[in-house]
Image 1 (cartoon, rainbow, N blue to C red):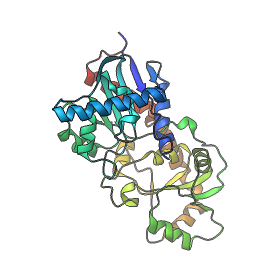
Image 2 (image 1 turned 45 degrees about the horizontal axis):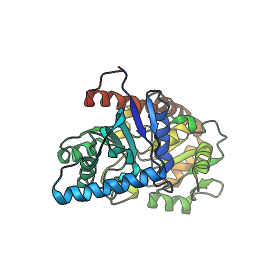
Image 3 (image 1 turned 45 degrees about the vertical axis):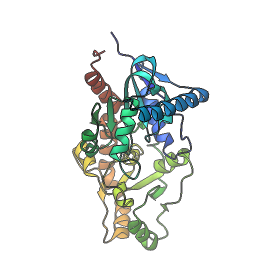
Image 4 (image 1 turned 135 degrees about the vertical axis):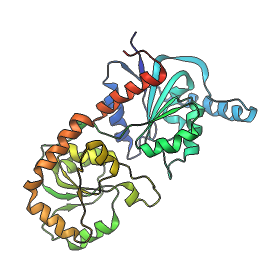
Length: 323
């Protein structure tokens, strides 16, 4: 018997700059013919959120153990939600009974503590949780009693990226910046080098800029944000690879581990401008690395690969028969 999967589509927090990234993962999962997209209307989401809130408050007051669900079973054998935070409004379908799983981005301070994640998982009855770094497994497993935590790296869907654009931007930095390196480039790069570092308003402009960039600067958030303890590899690295740009910055150890080699050109902090000029003057020497990164990512590190791994784990952890 085939296992039926339900993808709880997130319609909350659309104004977040990361919303298109979450949707990219969802869209990839939704292509699987074994998956049914679960899309609830605004009224349904509102009443589910209100009902859940009341059940949780009363449950805690009277000592009723979670999960807080209504006595109606979901149609699907397993439901999964792609979550950018621990808020019930992102997965209101979880108010129904049934097997539940979630992929949670950034389950770490300042966004969420292990205790907050544990309470969220228990309140909703999530039995399998996927996180983007193995250290999160070590931190969360002791706090979660009835939920298995598994490491699944971030990724992308390369089909939406522009890898064949004319490379008219020499150097691109977008989003988070490592300030000492950025300031050194601003002060020392010659004017003929096109350094694009201003805000990109939407995803269309972002994809276009990445497709036109020869070099994309990437640093882990641990360096750009002092309040983050884990050196994660984010999808920004994979986006640069999909755009066939050379990555300049710092390689998170986990990226080197899953690729089997270092796909990043390490920044020369002593002579950052000289380094950029040298790379651009000898850019053809880096074509082999660019192509290798693109091929490795395409063959092994897309959201399709991540989803297949997630399915294997779900079938094993939930006791469903292999389809």
